[in-house]
Image 1 (cartoon, helix red, strand yellow):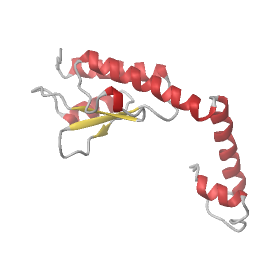
Image 2 (cartoon, helix red, strand yellow; image 1 turned 90 degrees about the horizontal axis):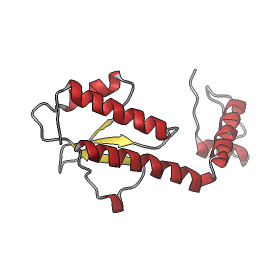
Image 3 (tube, helix red, strand yellow; image 1 turned 120 degrees about the horizontal axis):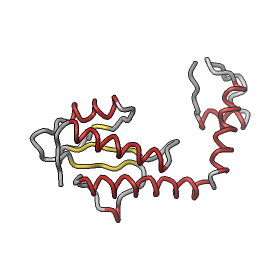
Image 4 (cartoon, one colour; image 1 turned 90 degrees about the vertical axis):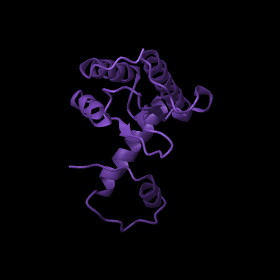
Length: 153
């Protein structure tokens, strides 16, 4: 079973424009999902509370990746706390696919960079993630570097 949260359709439904909207997700399921998302958002302190958590997550990732020798593409002062782009290390043992697969095997997914100006990868810090998740992700990166015999500092 899959769930979706389509805010646009939910809003239209609530406003009465989608009275006859039918698909594989019933209207009660959508409404319950939407209500739960609103409760969680409110419990966290709304947009300000969520933004604070995202900033904390971003700070952990940026500081700890830097301490291992990774370089961010953007300086901290303009880095948005959503997804952080890192330059792939210039190290003979670094191969993105091996790095990616090792992290994936440990339960962490990163995004390949889509830039033409540099070889990069990205780490997200939004969603249902907290400080503990960020520290676990960093620990997985450390283990991966050790497994691949990559020393950046």
